[in-house]
Image (tube, rainbow, N blue to C red):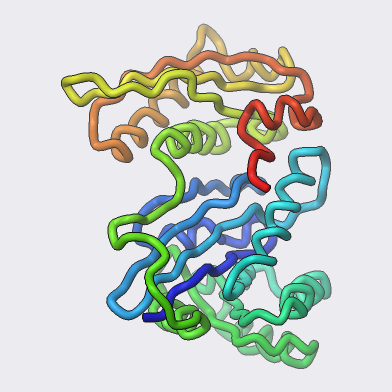
Amino acid sequence: MKSGYVAVIGKANAGKSTLVNVLVGEKVAIVSPKPQTTRDRIMGVLTRENHQIVFVDTPGIYRQRNALTALMMKTTELTADGVDAILFVHDGHAGVGDDDVALMKKYMALGLPMLIAYTKIDIMPKEQIPADAKKLFEAGVTADVYPVSARKGMRLKQLEEAVANCLPEGEAVFPDDVISDRSQKFMVAELMREKILLKYEKEIPHGVAILVNAFERHENGAYEISLDIVCEKKNHKAILIGKQGAAIKEVASFARQDMEKLLGAKVFLTVFVKVREDWRDSARLMKEFGYGTEE
């Protein structure tokens, strides 16, 4: 069978995590309309009779603003250097700029098989697709372009088969029933962060880290989960909590519902909000919060 690792790379908000989730058939990475939603390298495993594709979802390429985003960009670079192929995800709805061409050429230069998933074709004029493909070719981007829509499930089978054909022959990397390398505890924290990204505006959600203090399953099957929402400033804490705690109660309720879907059981969730000033520029605190622990 064909099997191997595929780095999923592209700009922030290109739709990488959404595409991986749809291809794998399960939610293995959180999604939101905001950049920097994906902070970690997350694997989504797609297993078929004739191939197994390990998609390695990476943080979106984004201008470095602090030590955390610098670390995220380093994660993306390291991932691209240790895989069998690259799936470059491009937001077709946004058009093609010179910076897009430069990024694609940068990863083509690694010498790995590379495909371009040209996404969001369901919300753009159809005539733009061949025009952009021609523009890429004329600019020297020779990787095959696959127009797709993850949201509508359009042309994903062709993309999957093309990705599988890029991989070497070999044994499956993971057992058939594995869909991700991440634990349920990790996903619980990510679901909480996803709801914060969706609920709050401006800089607040980007300055949040989630720490799971307790993750216990009782004899009746229910889970007892306690977590900290760590923000960077006291006024951010007040906004997160909201008037008489209304905001944090609402976002925790939405997160708990998704946690119950993930775990298939009742969840009792306790949430605390704490302040750690400018933690995104502290190597010690980033490591304490689980960032930068991978080599």
